[in-house]
Amino acid sequence: MSLATIGLSSAAGAVDQFGDVERDRWYATSVAWLVGEGITTGTSPGCFSPYDQVTRGQLVTFMFRLDGTLGNQPGANEHPFDDVIHDYQQASVGWAFAEGITTGTSASTFTPEAAITRGDFAVMLWRYAGEPTAAGPHPFTDVTLGYQQAAIDWMAETGITAGTTPTTFAPNGNMTRAQAASFLHRFMDEPATVTPAAATGTESNACIDEYESILVDAGLTDDEAVCIAPFITDLDIDTVVAVLAGLAPIDAQLIDILSDIIIAGCIPTTDRQAALIRAFL
Image (cartoon, rainbow, N blue to C red; front, side):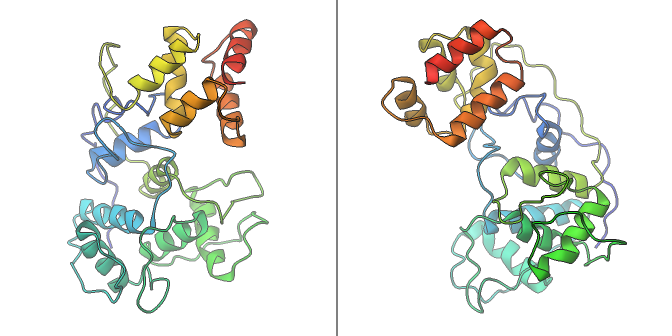
């Protein structure tokens, strides 16, 4: 497989087309590249869903399309898995099986709808790269499965991952779409992407408008709502409404999101931070 660096991408506007991908997020450039290369078009018009989990079927489809961008001609091979029913996954699963990227979850199943873990993502990407040998071991004490060691050694050495902390990789955690975009982008040596044109602020985006509206109704300003909404679009809209109305308890995920919102500077003063917390608590 050729891993030549892809040239300048035609990703102009790729991030701005998604209401749930702010341009200063750590994954924004990777999403712009992924979309510009045609590896994904998002989950629905105007939505990328960066915090959604990546399924096994979606991952091999991403990799199949990535292989095509490199000038290769991935074939539509047969596979033995009777649980792969979506037409768009047939060719990519057959290709991944023929290339030795996956052997399935059993002799006759691939389990395409199951979320892919970070450890198994690393193994599939390592196999696609030709199973390269790293010079040294990785620093992650939570990687215990033998079949994942060489792949994560390579991921750490090449800078595709820095782990979730200096000593942890979280191999059993499920990959998100944002993480997948970032890993694949780094795997390709972060090819250049055209910086999306600045949004004018007048666009209507069905993916995010409703979230902004309920935040304003909860007492936040328009500017605060615009900044905060992308953080909560991975939550079901009815859940957010119920929490704001005091009809549902706040959970650990939402507490983490509130922390991220404050760290991001969406609410710059302590008075307004208190108003945000009151709205949700």
